[in-house]
Length: 130
Image 1 (cartoon, one colour):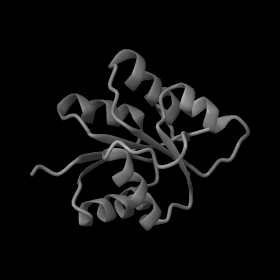
Image 2 (cartoon, one colour; image 1 turned 90 degrees about the vertical axis):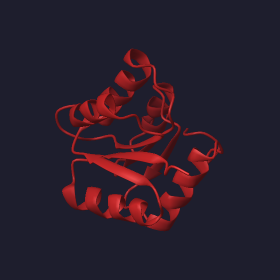
Image 3 (cartoon, one colour; image 1 turned 180 degrees about the horizontal axis):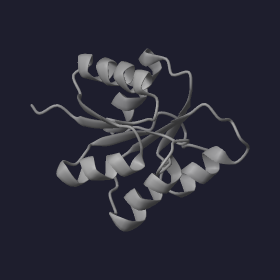
């Protein structure tokens, strides 16, 4: 059986490595990108089964990346958004443009792995994002 492909997009190199390592150890084929622009290039080379995307990044942030993913490319893969910001309306805005679920930083690896597994199995990690 082929491993599910997860694309991790975050501008923090340490967090990318840690999450990538945890996902790889859990059996996922993991690739990482430092921003939405780099992620676009990776997705054009190889599709993902799930994207894990930070909202606040330089170059192309998570919201702009999600808009591109849903509106231009029309990919319907689950998108798990993670952020350290808890601004009012942020979860609703992310959901409106295609986020499947949202998790707040600091990310606990067991919770992240649980959400990833649920999303890849077709079961939402919560009752929606908002």
